[in-house]
Image (tube, rainbow over all chains, first blue to last red):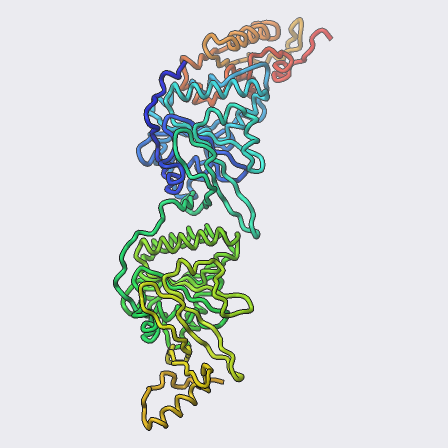
Amino acid sequence: MTISKRKPALLAKLPSGIEGFDDITSGGLPQRRTTLLMGGAGSGKTVLALQMVTSAALHGVPGIFVAFEENALQVSANAETFGWNLRKLQKKKLFFMDACMRADVVKSGPFDLTGLLAGLGAKADEMGAKLIVFDAIDVLLSLLDDPAAECRELSRLHEWLMDNELTAILTTKVDDDRPSSAQRYGFMPFMADCAVLLSQRILDRVVVRAMRVLKYRGSSHVLNEVPFVIGPTGVEVGASKGVHPEPQPFTERISIGNRRLDAMLGGGLYRGTNALITGSCGTGKSMLAGNFIEAACQRGERSLFIAFDENARDIARDIGTLGIHLGPHLSSGLLRMESLRSESASSEEHYMHLKRVISAQQPACVVIDPLSALARVGGAPAARAVAERLIYLCRNAGITVLFTSLAEGSDPQLETTALHVSTLADSWIQLSYALIDGERNRAISIIKSRGSKHSNQMRELVFSETGITLADAYSADGKVLLGTLRMEKEQSTRSALGGNHRPSTAKGGRRK
Amino acid sequence: MKREPADAVPAHGAYVFRLYLAGGAPNSVRALANLYSVCHRHFPGCHRIEVIDVLKDPLRALAEAILVTPTLVKVSPAPTQQIIGNLSEEEEVLRALGLPQKEHA
């Protein structure tokens, strides 16, 4: 009876107000049609629907939220925790209906939804509502307790929505994230033009949320499952679509904090690119990172140091022993140091958090130490995707990033990184230990530096109270000399030449 | 306490009902007829029925959170009680109203 009313034109979309969601659905909710949000208990259906209707109201699209499971007070309390001011919106743009059936209600004979729909229709007309949410429609349907009646009432609802030309969001519970369990309400998947499944899994004791667009009639959409988080401002969908790096030409060079290392890289780092420092435990990755961030602060650039699983103040203290003092920059606000526990959240949540911190601090240079911490929880593939997006995010913002990665395993020369981010890295600096003649010395080499003629030489990395220095590794009798052997060789060369042919870069670097 | 011929009815005040209907829908017509019949037999002379057509007064139905039609609300005596459906299952109605279900026992 109402089919003729439907417009055959190109499907219009209503932006959901959730950036990543609009990306995976190519623009948002189907206008004047029905979207079904399915998921298990606690999967985020209500929050997502609430955020969509709130966001629409904020953008001048009046909406109605019908809550069959939670009362209006609970719902608005939930909204307040995300900072959505519903009371302000509630005057004209947003109407909440408490539709929890009384527990002591008695059933006697058949009934239907005419009463509810008549009331809502009048309200929708009165306020000019365009969007309507039926939260926990399964609770309403279970009241009918009869498959035939459920189907009849869903069909009634469907017709009512079309007659009123409303964009609708229906949420319903499914068992164990299986969309097939929604088949119980056979008609529901049919009446929806867009169906989204929300899920939550436990991976390494951490909750990982994801959503998948099961279908979207008349529109393209991302087929894959995409991660999302429920953060302090609501749902954030981690769509990987649309974050490809802009092909910006980076021409400005900035110092990595050490002149000799700059020279090895072919003249420092290009601004807006990233550098990866790999090395096993204790090779000095954080020290180099600290050196880089100090140089940025000395140039007067805003900076950010993200430390995973280590107290930022401890790092600042350790770096201080090399004469690198971050304290003044921290107190001036030029530098922000943030300590995160890798196991406290999924990599997706870390990403969203870092995104917020980056947007708050507006840094020119960022250190993430170590990036490999992302992979500790929730599996490597998810972490790799997150690392990739993080790198693209920074690149698009013109931020120079230095990230470290712990090389685990027996072979310190192992030229792989936990996240396989080395392929994304513009520059790759490798730190290692050389164990020769009873001495353990640090060695540094450049594996790659895009767009630069970088050094192929290994250098000795020397830490002292006055800072970080790079010393030439001497090659003699087919051996690379480091530490004491290198210094003896330097000394003998100097005496042979009878002067200070090469100024030692490693004063006090005689190490035991 | 006053005793009606057929049943024991606590008659300390009248029975007040509100019946929410959807125009002339079959279930609504039946609900009204069923309610009249119950009242006639159990509360003769001491009941009042207010009929609200949700199609004519939808905002009132919304304000009173009426989800389905027909819905019968027993307003008094307290406590209030909601009964949904066309009231064809009379035993359920009587039990909800606190009346004995079989009078010819």
